[in-house]
Image (cartoon, rainbow, N blue to C red; front, side, top):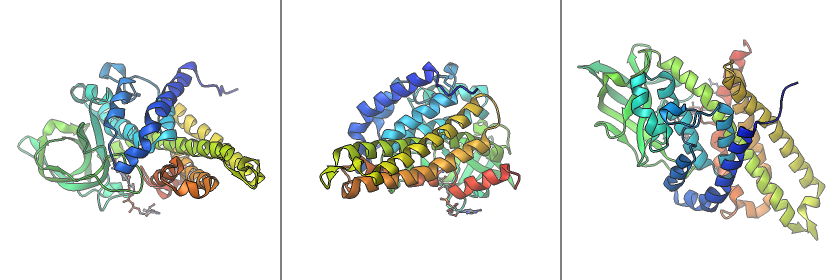
Length: 378
Ligand SMILES: Cc1cc2nc3c(=O)[nH]c(=O)nc-3n(C[C@H](O)[C@H](O)[C@H](O)COP(=O)(O)OP(=O)(O)OC[C@H]3O[C@@H](n4cnc5c(N)ncnc54)[C@H](O)[C@@H]3O)c2cc1C
C-alpha cells in the first residue's frame, strides 16, 4: 500500500513555514499589496530560515531539500500571501535552477552561493512581447563578437529582475538561425535596461519588469550549457516550475477555504451563524474535497520528480487542476464573505485578485492542455 503520511521532516517544513507566514507575513500582506512594495524584510527573514534555495544542494549554499519539501513551503506561503510566494518560487525554480542544472562548475561556484542563500535574487527571462505561449518564437538575438555576446532584444513580465538585490537574469536568445541558447546577464551590465515595476491586478508586492537589451555585452563564458540547447533547457525548467505554481494554486485554494470557514463561523444572518445553512456547508464540503484531490496531485508530481521518474505530465495536470480549482475556490470563498469580501480589508479580496495569474503564468491553462495532450499521444 502507498504511504500517505508525510515524513516528520515534511511536517516540520509545513509547521515552520506556516508559523512564519502567519506570524510575519499575514500582518503586513495587505499593506505591502496596497503600497505595491517589494517585501525586502521578509525575503531577508526567509533567507535566514533557509527558504530561498531549498532544493539547491548545501555545497552551493542551499538547503538541499527534496522537491516535496519545497512544494509544501510554497503551498504554505501562498496560503497567506501570493506576492511573497511567487518571489520565492520564481527565484528558486526559474532564476536559480537554470544555473544549477545547466551551469558549469565555475558558473555554479560564482552565482549559486549568493542566490541559494537568498542574499541575492535571480530572474528568468523567457517571455517576449511577441513570444508568450509560443516561447520558441524568441526574437532577442545574441551575436558572438570579440569574445563576448552582444545582445539586442526585449523581454516582458519578468519576475524578480529589478529589485535592489537582483543579481542576474538568465535569458533565452537566438544565437543563430533556429538556434536558441541561454545566457546569464548580470544586473548593472551596460545596455541592459530594466523598466519601472509594472502595475498589475495581483501579485502587487512582487517585482515584475520589462527588460530591454541594447548592444548589451556579456562575456562569452556567460553562455549556460552547450550552445543551441536553450529550447530544451527552458522546457525542462518549465516542467519543474509547474510543480511550484501548482503548489501555489493549492495553497491559495487552502487559504481561501480557511478564510471562508472562519467567516462562516462569525457571520450571523436570519438569527443564526451562516455556517448553519446547508448551502454554505455544501460549498465548504465541495471546496475541502477538491483541495484534498489537488494536494494528492501536487505531492505526487513532486514525489515523482524526487524519485527521478518522469513527472512532466503529472506536473502539467497538477498545474492545470490547481489553477482552475483556485479560481473556483477563491470565487466561492468571496461569495461566502458577501459584500465584506469585496472590501480591501478582507484578505479574500487580495487572494481573489492574486488567483488569476495562476491560470496564465508558466504556461496558460490552454498550454497545459496542449502539454497533457502531447503526453497522451494526441
Ligand atoms: C505577473 C507575471 C509574471 C510573470 N513572470 C514571468 C517570468 O518571470 N519569466 C518569464 O519568462 N515570463 C513571465 N511571465 C509571462 C507568462 O509566462 C506569460 O504571460 C504566459 O506564458 C502567456 O503568454 P502571453 O501573456 O504572451 O499570452 P499569449 O501566449 O499571447 O496567449 C493569449 C491567449 O491565447 C491562448 N493561446 C496561445 N496559443 C494557443 C494555442 N496554441 N492554442 C490555444 N490557445 C492558445 C493562451 O492560452 C491565452 O489564453 C509572467 C507573467 C505575468 C503576468
